[in-house]
Structure formats: C-alpha cells, structure tokens
Image 1 (spheres, rainbow, N blue to C red):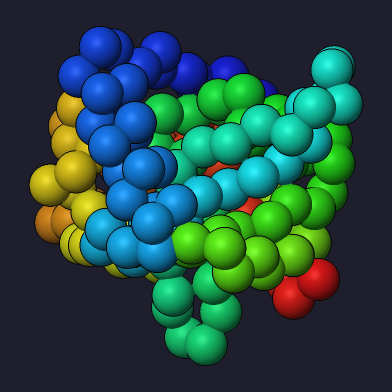
Image 2: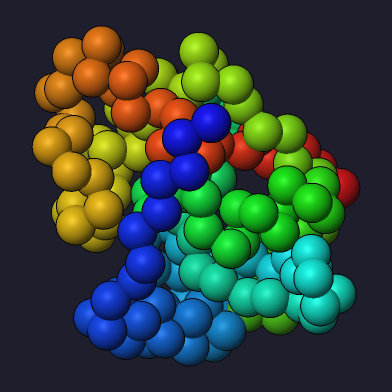
Length: 147
C-alpha cells in the first residue's frame, strides 16, 4: 500500500484553523465539515476540517494529503461524526479500493483543486485516467454511510 502523506505546512494549519472556526459557527466553506473521529491510540475525539464530496447520490471523504492521522483513525474506528455548527451527523465509513476511486478523484479535483493543489502533485481535473489510477493508492477515499 502506498503510504503517501504530506505533512501540513504553516499556511495549511492557519487555513484549517480559520475553516474550523467558521464551521463551528455554522458556516460551511465550499461544503466543508468538521470531522470528529476517535483516536486509535488515545481514544480521544480528534477534529479536522474535511470536504464532503457528493457524487451520484453518494457522499465521500477524500484525503488529499494522503494517509493522514484522520484517515488512520477512521480506518480503526469505522465511524465518525460530521458537523456544521452544533448539528452532528453520525456515520459509518467504507473505504474504497483503488479501482473504485477514479470518478471521485476527478470530481474532487474539479471542485477543490484550487484549495488543495499543493497536495496534488501534477494531477489536474484533465489528467488521464492512467495518471489518476497510478495516484489512487495515495489518496484514501471513504464512502459515508448514514450512522
């Protein structure tokens, strides 16, 4: 398994801090939510802003920085909670295999490349399927199931 991970820089940390504050006030930035998931080592609830992708009647979480801590925690817990303001939405998660990811990755690029381009390498919305397929192991994708 490709364990690609891009550590967030200072600018990303500041951006995430601002986005989380807005989300907690009930303001979603470009579809963002606060993901709450139990830490696999500490058992404490961990919080991170995420973009929820809606595609063909399903919803997905995609990790543009790769196998981040929230990804590892969600794999271990199998469930989490999405929030905007005080509205909690519990869910379970199903991780997708690499062969299933192409449509989600392309749509994610279309919607949020402007926000996460520093983490995408050479990938663009116009990248050939072979390039997306080759990159898929480094971009974990979870289907959100109602909790």
